[in-house]
Image (cartoon, rainbow, N blue to C red; front, top):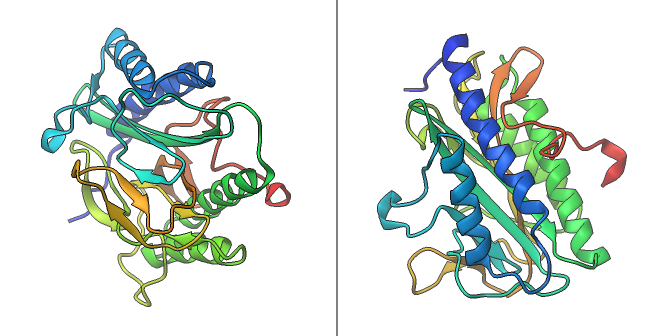
Length: 261
């Protein structure tokens, strides 16, 4: 069953997501060539704890870190470690927080150092896909409308939309109903109602949509070795589109203007 959250609950969810956004902003200033993904993860955990939150990914089904940091061909669930970022890398950071019994979740991707135009186009397109999906998350629409918005945006650029990993409901559990697909299944899915809280998270590959999971049991990579991008916001379904709970001046992905792609 898909939960309909009260405004009181939504306020708690907003607080959790604002911690997530704060951590993203803090880490953004640290992403430079030579830093390790473990250093970023350690700092993320420190900031989360300093704000009274709990890193909700750590220990989830045995996951060993506070964040997921995926680099270049890594799609999602990259485990932070000794890998050093190099100039031009696409770095995707996914952060989850538990605060006052409610969960926040958002992901952000950026290039490390010098901008590469081809990678920047992938970033811009995925950002735009998230923006259109959030606008489609309005009361009276269906779950299918979210997937259509993402798939149609990315298909124009011949990018692959990952099908194995999807968005989800979020609230008093990190993953709740419904699954939020990033592509059109041909079925309408659930009717969107005001007060539903969803984590919308397109994962888009420069090449094929196909992925594989490495031997660590977590890290998903593109099958062809080409770069991937991941953006995510937690939103509330409203009459005129999704209200972004993880929105700040910095965490403004998903609000990209149409002409920017």
